[in-house]
Image 1 (cartoon, rainbow, N blue to C red):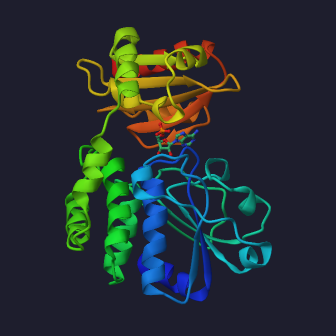
Image 2 (cartoon, rainbow, N blue to C red; image 1 turned 120 degrees about the vertical axis):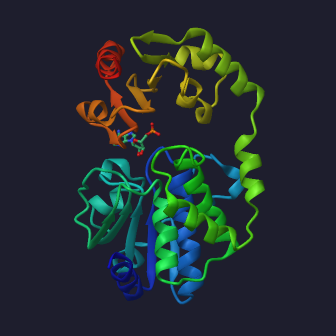
Image 3 (cartoon, rainbow, N blue to C red; image 1 turned 90 degrees about the horizontal axis):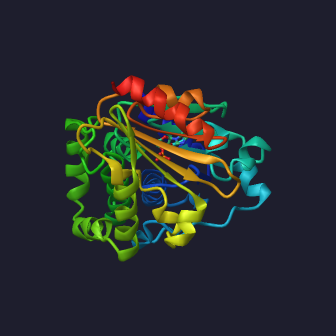
Length: 313
Ligand code: AMP
């Protein structure tokens, strides 16, 4: 069974390095820090390093990353990649590509394969979040779950399930959340902080709702660097594809965000359609109804929108 395999591998290593994906979100950070707490509480003789950078998002949960340990430690360590697959999607992936750390396991709910040559891989897209996988692991293995671990894991589940809204939210999700809540972590603290809004966000939301475009049943918005500077939008607020979510009759919504190098990050979402098929055409990926990609220039925006409008028509 996957959980016994994973535990067997974890037991073999005295140090463990947990990796998150680029453009971090609540799930990869919550999974990373939750898993660290779980391993440290259940195997106190092990040293666990969480490496990467939260980019200051969700700072109310104190995502303080560790420094990358020295090469001797790396060589002897187990690497755990959570919520990610290909090395170009993993923060600090040079440690993997340069073979500074060789023994990797992957815990992920993305559909795609990987290029990690892992010792073991537990990939299951039926989970709404990688954090849900880690909760399942802890329950199956009867691991002790601290309040702190539960809070991190809950954050991952809550955010990646769209606050229990997306269709991968299941009976299993609620059973696992019920176990997490038994630790009596401060769930309201998480809900309150996630719900906070500031003036900058509102101004940007107004801009998006005044200037979105549509084609068929697809709605989209392009954020240029110029506009971003003019409205003084912080990096963490530039990606707000959720501003266009579920506006009837649009069933696909897309955010295009110009990057410093001129490329354009694409965030695709749908309530009912498979938009993953569009993302992979541009070297991206993700999930059936939530995917991302990067396109080379503005000309490709019309192309992406056209593909989406055909699917959503
Ligand atoms: P995002 O729009 O960045 O929140 O991404 C939505 C989903 O697609 C997440 O699960 C990401 O991990 C995944 N994703 C985003 N960009 C890419 C990409 N360039 N390649 C593969 N997966 C991606």
